[in-house]
Structure formats: structure tokens, C-alpha cells
Image 1 (cartoon, rainbow, N blue to C red):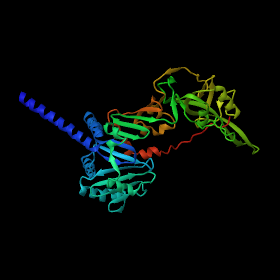
Image 2 (image 1 turned 30 degrees about the vertical axis):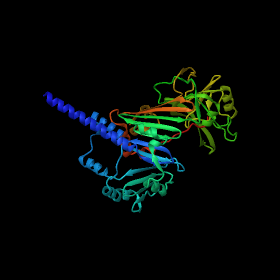
Image 3 (image 1 turned 90 degrees about the vertical axis):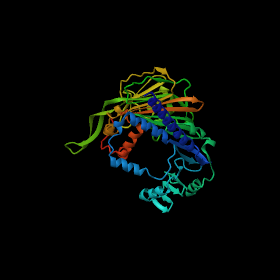
Length: 468
């Protein structure tokens, strides 16, 4: 028995060593990829990293991935027989002189017969065959060129791909190992998805019930406060947002043209003094006076006022500002009713806002008697955003999308200054289903009608507040 246990343990150890050696070899091979010398942006997808994460998730929660029939599974396996060699890491790269949305990549052909079959059956059905080794989508956004050993392709949403560049990629012309470029650090990063250009480095990971995203970049627009502070917002809010930072350069005039005065985002920015927060708690009832017209017994057209109840978002906007200056501006253009405090030019469409202020703070709220709270607490973050999808699905007009957005639970984003002019954003998107991998859930959403979600017909009538 002892001898059997020793032999079993030895076999397990050897299998583990072989397993890690195999994946390590694939990692080293994939990181020897050649990229063009004029590359200015790189996207890296860790295929093996995703595979390991999905495998562990399947072992932990097999029921979450059940349901595919044998025939469907076999078909999926057949679809994977492209004849291409899928490395441990796939690299896509953008090039100088090309649009920022255009990316190129190459794949080795491991089985030329299988690839030829794939090209004739799959590519021909979805792309137009220009030549025997050249395929292109009808809108010219996807171009594929190949020889006997390699495939090069370009994805260009703005249709600026060049066949000559693809030929250079196949011939390895003007290329260099990625480890010898400014993108060398990407080879040591194990995150599922990475993006790097001259100004930023972003990473994304897909785990069970959660997507984590971080991004470090140089900001040319805002300068975070040295010692950030923020008001204490409710943990029960549907949406919470605050930022404590200066605008580095702002061409916005303090007073928009007199011909079209309005209380807009640009107007608020002109009074902004390094802090603003926005909070949406729930819905609230507003009573608006709708002005209509009817004909009397003498067939004369007369005005008729009707009180109308509307459910609108319970939103408050608080900002550090010169209250006197802002109040004078609103009164000057007839946007503020001094007796009621009501703003006549809505910031958020279809809602009425009330103005309240002290010397250095301004509050705009859909609730008339909301208290103006200016007390703040210190924070390491200069920016925070939270979206509660569960609560959002209960609010108008988003309740028509409840069957789709209930996939998600909460989105949180935090921003922090890490160096001079450099900012780090950390985001976390959590899902209602905490057991299934987040990437699988996103792909299922796309397969089951993401297009429908993005182009939903709300079929609703929204009545904006009219004249009083």
C-alpha cells in the first residue's frame, strides 16, 4: 500500500510538472512574437490565462455550464478546427500613421489543409473573396491576407486598412521582437486582457461573477486635489458620483451667448470650483402646470392650466461654487424664480430643479425642500462612481430593460492620483450570478440579443414640464 501511494504521488507530481512546463513553454513562445517597428499601441489577450480561469470555474460550478447537447458540443469542436495555431498570448497592434481604432495581427498556420477548408467554408460565407488568398468584408472593415505559413489580418472600423501593410507582416518586414520594444513589460503581465499605448496601460480580468478593470494614464484635462474630500452620499442611491479635481484647461466662457442662454453642463463648469457630486436616490413626484388651449362657447381659443403629476428622478447636484455669482447669472437670464427657487431651464430633461446655496456651495435638486449639506470627509480617491443596476431597473424609463440589465448587479469606479499628472482608475463590475464566469455571461448576453438591448424601442411618452 505504501509503495502504491509513493508511485501515485510521483505520477501526480510528474503530471503537475509537465502541466506547468507545457504552459510555460507556450508562454515563452508566444512572447517571442514579432511586431512592426512602428507599433504605437498593443492589445494582449492571455488565451491560456482565460482557459485556466474558465476551467477552474467549470470544476467549481459545473451546473452553471450545463445545457449544451452533444451535437452542439461536437459542432463547436469542429468550428475550432481552423488550422491556425492559437498561442498562449495573442497580440494585436496599432501602427503610427493609421487610425487609432485600426489593429493588425498575425497567426501561424499549423495545418494548411484544415485552414484551406476553413477559408473555403467559413471565410467565403462571411467575407468576399478578392483573390485566392485575400478576403475582405463587404464594408472593408476586416481584411485577411495569407500564404502557406501565416495569416495576417486588419480590423479597421474607419476603413483605413492597407493591403501593403499585411504583405509586410507576412514577410516579417520591418519587425522586431516585442521584448525589445517599449511594450516589453506586457510579456510579464498575466492579466486576461491588456492594452498599452504611449499614454496608458489598462488591464482587465474576468472571474466568477465579476469583471475587474484598472487603467493608469496621463491626464491632460484634470488635476486631482492633493487632499481629496467629498460629501457623504447615501449607500442606497441608484447612482452616486463625486469628483474633487481642477480642470487644467477650460475654454468654456462663464457666460454663454446672450442669444441662447441655458443652464447646461458647460454653464455649470464655468462656476465649478474643484468639486461636484451627483446623487440619484429614487423617483419623486413633481406637480407641473401644463398649459393647454381649448375653445369656449363663443368658439374663442382660451388658455387652460392643468396640474399634472409626474414621477421624475430624485436627483441632487452639489458643487463648490461662488453662489452669488451663479445666482445672479441665473436671474439675469430669467432662469431662476427668486420666490420659489425653481430653475426654469432644466439641467436634466423632463425634470424641474430647485436652486439652494450658501456662500461657497450650490445645490440643484428635484426636491424643493432638500437640506443643503456641505460637510465633507477625507478620501484617498479624488473620483468615485457607483451604479446600482438592481435599483436602476426599478426606475423609469429603465424599468423596460429590467429583463436585460438584471444580469448586472453593481458598477464601481475609483480614481486616484499616483504620480504627477498620472491617474489610476480601478473599476469593478459585479454580476447577479456570482458563480458563472463573467466573460461567459457577457458572451451569452451578446448571443441572446445585445443588439436588441442597444437599440431598444422604449415605446413611452415622456411629458416635459411646461410653462407655469
